[in-house]
Length: 266
Image: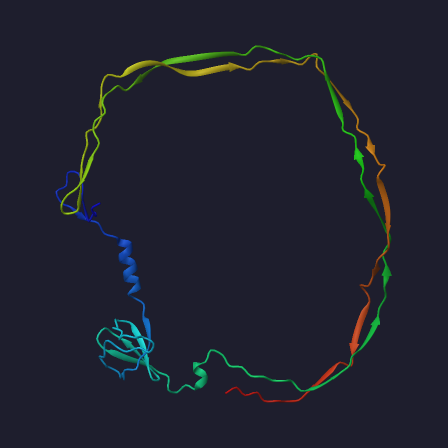
């Protein structure tokens, strides 16, 4: 299947290129970011033009492009497309500057005295409650319908009017699509359908139905009251609860005597 590189519209002599604007926008966005290559073994100074460059961990030399960043010793360099520019020097930092974390161990020293607890205030007992358990079943209510209901016959009325329908004498032709030797999509316009004399028919414009009437004169409904069966219902008495809202507990004599210490991480 051939690829499509251009498109030529009906009635146009010029073929237009097909452009993927989304891809162009993504490429432009990616070119705005820098890329860190790693640590180089090549001796770099501000203005060095060394390229390709050797990177620790890479088997082959790496060709730098605009925005690439490397470290040499304690210094940082960024490539501007022609030369390396120094923009950072880490020689003044200590060993901990290159660590993600530092830790040490420390055991607090001192003594703890045992506390004493005194309880005061008042407590009250809540009133006893009784709970009802088990099941109570109600017999189903019954309704008795008697007598007869008679529905009257339904009637429908129709209303019509003349309607003209277009008469198609020719369906015309579809556009044609071809791809030439230059990978250009060429579109040729088709022919429109041809209409003849309209055809006249009668169309139903309204249908009216009269609702049937139901005669309930002789229908009777009798409702029987349901009965509740309490045979399985039980009553249980619950023990009363003690309310300790106003009771207070006070601790005294708690103390910690610590010893001062100095912690150093290096």
